[in-house]
Length: 162
Image 1 (cartoon, rainbow, N blue to C red):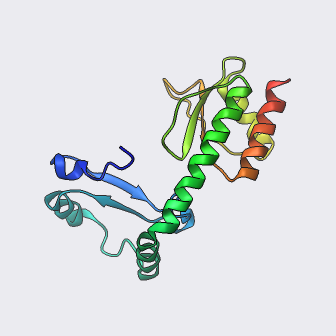
Image 2: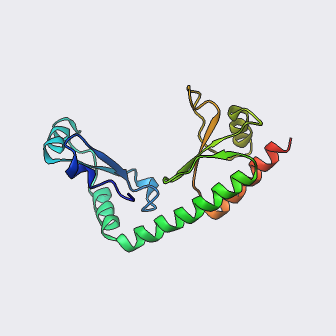
Image 3: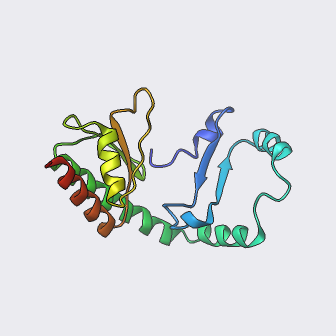
């Protein structure tokens, strides 16, 4: 399914966490929320900070969530950019897992992921690298704008051609 919100009604032990970062273009707001059954939300409310969200952030988040046409437009733009980025990364010989998120997980057999990560950082291109079992050979790449994705692919092309 494109949306897991219905799982909250189906199961009594599900919490869905969401942010307004990519889908609402509000990463700087740092606003997130939870969907869960009332008894779970009640338990979460008992342990939350008294004023964990300021009034301006709450107003902005409410307005953003109400603007579903804009949200759908942003999501479609991310989907198109993701498909294009996956295609370009695969053309470079990188293994890219299929994704339904705002990032892709990339494996490179030709070079250590840590080396690619550092090479990108040296170029001012920032992706995520986790030196953890199961992820040591992978890069987590967020879907950027078309221009950001061009810079990323160009940087990877230069690193892989060395």
